[in-house]
Length: 285
Image: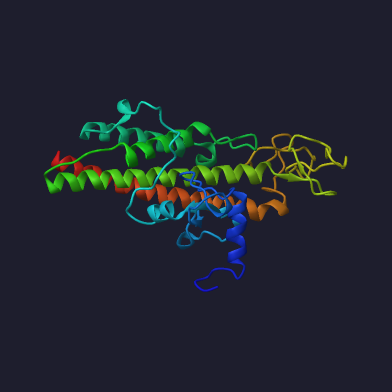
């Protein structure tokens, strides 16, 4: 296939659709045998930023959501993230928009401080906070469906629209950051039995299916103690220099790190756009 796509791209994207139950991972629209939505395979980390065509870097997206993240339109969002009485969350004036944008900025700062991103105290026992996804989706829904700001002044309308769109796209990019962190833990916590290949727990000593002895995630080459902490250069037990990770995990682990860095770069760039949009906004309000 042209444009750098692998020859089995058609198979890969269909595998991703099946994995995601033919459901848009942004708005919940269903396609394929499940519905009428046109489905696309979206690169979480774009090809232009070094993103790969691996299935772990792909997620199912309907055509409308895919168009939104690559353009200037608003993406649809799930209907079940807001209460039935939405009067209290409608954005009807400039100050309410400012409040939501400020909350979004603070939410990104919280996400930015996650140990996998900051490098502080990262262990295989970590996880992604589901509250992040719920709050990100909720804010995106409010912006796309419950914001009704109309001004006679073209300058004011343009400032509001620019700030609203930049914030909505920033929230969307934040979901990609969370997805990349989740992939990181999938790789870190994933362990397969060397004999039968079954998935195994990193805390188990023996395979639950065949009883074979399981390896530790990685271990000190001198004292043999199992270690569950990332980014340590020396063994906490004997002080010996450590390998970063078993060789069989190194490639996938490095890929998740690169994906996180690329996703953060995109979100940071969009955060700068919000700052610029805020400056424009303040000049006319």
